[in-house]
Structures are given as structure tokens and as C-alpha cells.
Length: 186
Image 1 (tube, rainbow, N blue to C red):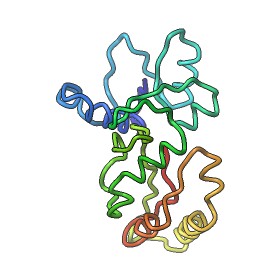
Image 2 (tube, rainbow, N blue to C red; image 1 turned 180 degrees about the vertical axis):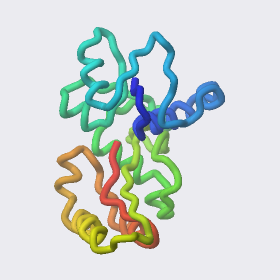
Image 3 (cartoon, rainbow, N blue to C red; image 1 turned 90 degrees about the horizontal axis):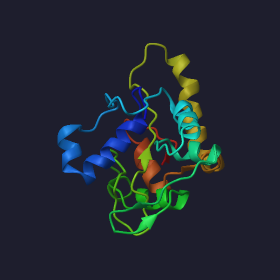
Image 4 (cartoon, helix red, strand yellow; image 1 turned 60 degrees about the vertical axis):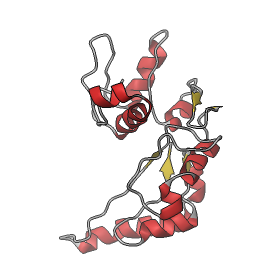
């Protein structure tokens, strides 16, 4: 388990809270937890991977990219529609397509436990946040140029790194106003 705060822990806890009223009431949804002494808590995804590999029978949670890159065995999970699915780019895309992100352009909800026979239930988004007002605009401009480049040219890199490109209609809504989001992943 992660011993440090992480978005992965938040997303995992969000999924568990949607499945279990007991989890929601007792633990809630947070970026870090005080795990029981019987759990091995480590800092960072690389340490989770190493601990799972080095511990017979261990179960952990990491971003799908770590599973693929380290040739770990992923679990099948039962999704909201009752189907057992494997994590995959297609299953992440299905969760995104079933979300408020795609239907309304609202990025305020998580992507966990979405409807659809092919959805992976623990899909999460990756966000890039840039302040509206900055003290040193000349230093911020290169970062903004990178985000624009990523939106226009990053499709291949997104997929190579086990992420799903936002649909064009969804991405354009994300750029409007306060948001820049080059991609989302599981």
C-alpha cells in the first residue's frame, strides 16, 4: 500500500467508497491512510511494484502503466454493469465515454465505477493546473506552449504511455476557461 499521499490512493479509495458504505463511513476518500500494522506501506509507485514483486501473495495498487512496464499481473474487476473486465486502454476509454466529462464537459466528478459493459471501474484522470494569474508570465509561457503542443501532437505519446486521449469535444471544453488537460489515464 502507498504510505505517502497520492492521487492513486485517492482514486482507489473513491472506488472503494462507491462500493462499500462501510469503507465510506470508516475511511472516506483521501490521498493517504494510516494502514494497519499488518500492511506494508511504502512510498511511491516504484516501491509498491518492488514490494509486490518481492512479497509472495502480495496485492497492491499502482497506475496501469506500472503494471504493463513491470510485467505485473493485473486483476479482473467486476464493473458497475456486472461484467468482469481487465484494465486496458479500451476499458479506460469506455469509462471516460460514460462519464460526465464526455457528456457535459464537467470535470468535477471522478471516473470510478462508471456504467458500461466494457468500463474499467478504477479509471482516473490526470490534471495539469496552471494559475490564472502569474507573477512571471515569461516563465509560464513555455509551459502553456507545451500544453498546446501536447493537445495538438501528443496522441501517440499518450497511448504509448498507457493513457487515453480525451475526445476532441471533451478536450476543447477542458481548455476553455480555467482548464488545460493533455490526457487522462487509468
